Length: 184
Image 1 (cartoon, rainbow, N blue to C red):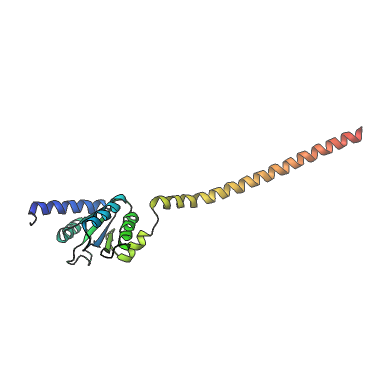
Image 2: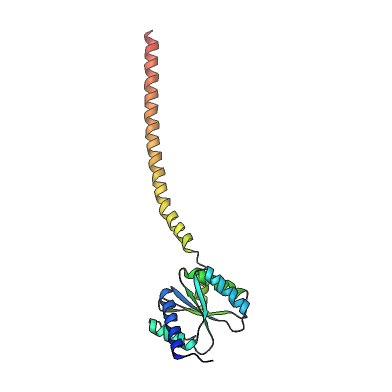
């Protein structure tokens, strides 16, 4: 049953909304996957804060143009499904590459990120990136290391001065007691 003109406009608006809210769009070939496999893929992408849907190609093309994106050459007639990365791109890319590793029928075609077309190889590289929380912890560790070293240097310098002063005090006390013993 063909879609009505009103339904097509609704779908284009829905696609535009998803495109504008997502940080990246990953295009995939899904032909041959059964419903159980698609459900499993959608679930893993949803857990990575993404959305995965089978899109009507002409409507997706209209939505991309409306959102100001260039149309990648991979969008030429073959059925595609789209993964929208709503938060972290590496998490959604990892969910997709992990699924592709276990399924020969699923292929990552390309991606759109900040109006640039990325290859499947680049999407795989993004999937290998650590999660944002890990990167933040690494940056904090890098920033914290020089400060900890500086505190250690200052602390060791202060303790050396205290040790020298303590030695002078002990030496002074020792000479006072020797002088008292000689006087007696």
